[in-house]
Length: 165
Image: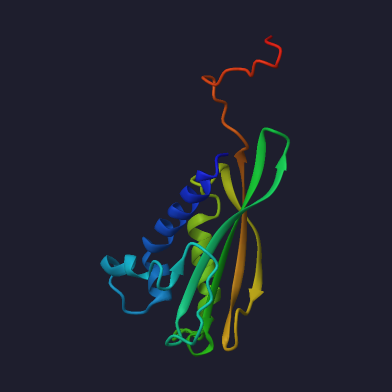
């Protein structure tokens, strides 16, 4: 894996989140899908973010990628973390239920099993409570994938101090 895959995973997830009407409407009610991109870097962040002050009781999604382990020279395990949280005034859905729970359910439906992240399928590992600051509640979702550790570069020559086969 080249570290550019982190960049690709984050861009893919941003697209997956902002092109699904159910997710977009849970983040910001009464938003037109043609304006969904405006949520990027205002309520949806490709890094861990916590608002400094209460900004209108909003709903937020943040995400990031770590490498959990490297199993030999061939594979590694990227972990995709997604933080979903909302101000307590925005948690209750009009139809009943909790906004952050519904968002987690919708996100999982969209990306769990996806083949756009790593080799094979992206797999849900855990969903845990998350409270980033006073009056905000949410969940942190963890997904794992498997990825190649390195890509072979056949054009690269063998160093002169090494034996040639």
